[in-house]
Figure 1 (spheres, rainbow, N blue to C red):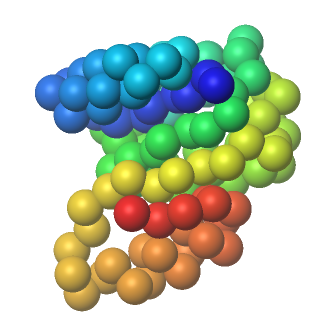
Figure 2: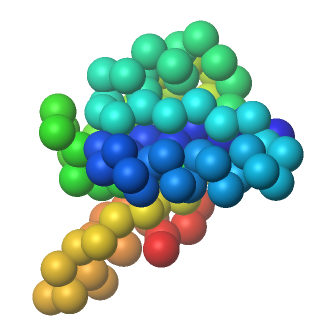
Figure 3: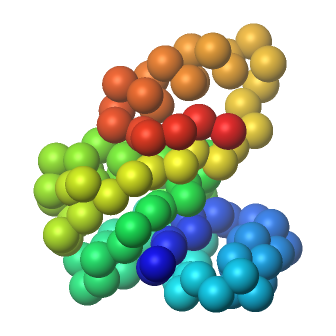
Length: 106
């Protein structure tokens, strides 16, 4: 199973990648939308773990682009949103992410 982690916090991205690799997954890491888009054009993934607050834009925009088939052969790839929204907006974020095509919100 091939996974893409899109996370701008290096320690978190490295910890997630190391744990998943230890379990036998093939893992790529991108720390922004630009890097993620470059990888998504070249590689088919089984899962994208996506942070919403990225330095070069909103992760939901990337999720929408994936679903629309605009960034490679991944329109059916499951998207797991990994983010820490403020409590007051958490429900709104979850609804918007789901409507944008995310498979799971954590």
